[in-house]
Length: 314
Image (cartoon, rainbow, N blue to C red):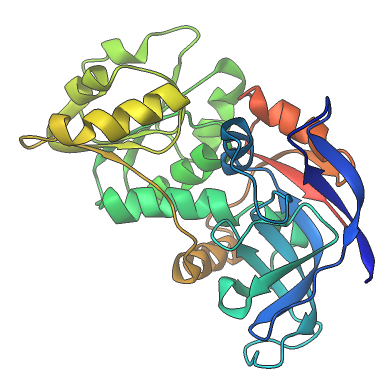
């Protein structure tokens, strides 16, 4: 068997993430083998690690941008050399490696206007943002939208997409992310280190909690009549509370919902087209090599990344 470099997760030992040689995967008849050019870190990676939910191949990494190296015998959508991008969070992860495999219908063509780095920073975070806003949020032009945690990967896409849909955006973030949030499209920015955003008299049609740990009743109070609150991320405590009490708090006209994003190629194609036209742009905070991926994960765990953390593989 041929070998490749990868970052594998091991439950035992002091080092959980290890850069090592593993067997290069072989595509099944409906799969493609992708030479990974770049990937990026998502909350799904480090939250899964905390919970001990490990991919079958012990390789994390949902986002992929790369070139098709080999196709399974029944694959009809792709050929060797095609440039692709995708979200493999529902297909076994595996992108923190030199090569990965994916079902042929779980990747899309990378727009020529996007570099591999830009393409790798898009999939899971942007799909989460679009499924929150357009899916459960049913965003409408002119709505007042509050985005709590506008500085990270999902947050930066959420602000840009809310702007695209014509919303009036209030973003909540730290001082270092305030100017970035304005540049991405927020009309109002609240620096939570200087001001308690929960005391605002403004009421919102749509609230997206991308980060933070505020009480659900506090968010409910900030909703306008008929408004919707969406738990998109946050602490594990906050996520569990939303899942447990969301339905109870949704009695009446105000809705309290949780978003669990799923890989969707139609959503990814929509987002990739916007990115290709320059209507949205991935924000990349730092770039790491594959060998440095454990450092990237450590930084991601602090919750202070501005946009996405890129893993350059090739």
